[in-house]
Amino acid sequence: MHEGWTAFEADEGRRERAQKLDECLAIYGGLFHGQPFTYEGRHYSVRPTEFMLPQPPVHQPHPPVWVVGAHVVGASRQRSLERAARWDGLLPTVVDEHAREGAPSYDLDSFAQVLRIVREMREEAGLPWEGYDRVVEADSSREFVQLDGSPADWEEADATWWVESWWSVPQGPEGLAEVRRRVEAGPPAPGGAQAPQRD
Image (cartoon, rainbow, N blue to C red; front, side, top):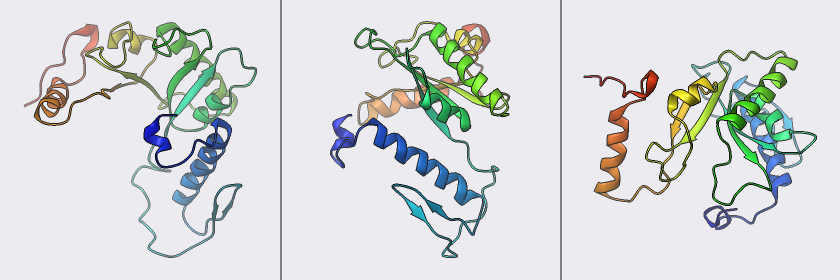
């Protein structure tokens, strides 16, 4: 765990965090179905209320939830991928004890493999693949995440979103200028060319 997290609370361990995440997601989904809503979990509980209820969300049944799904190489059960398959989108990662330190957690082949596993899980649960988001976290400058392949290659591997991830953006005008440059550049066009700019 990064010290940015542990500055606020102790690391309870992966199992405890996973249990809390599952409960929070259940509460999130339940609250959007309206009142009365009751939940009793190991960590959290909710009882019906009429206090300051929000309007129903425009996006039904709730705003989309993208879940990090960790494919644990060699594990007989993939609980993290099961969780991601139940929701609206997947940010995949691959956990492999033989991976090289500092290497990206997946490549085009392992990304496609994880998508095949999650697609099968969704099909078995009677959930559609169409409309399910498959997210690549990447960095067009190749400073933070150094993935091989162009955005078109990742699209061919069945990715539906490219999230520009730049964790080392400097504070101040220089960093702000680079963020604006990336936003104004827009998404890459098919074939790797830059998309035309909008006026």
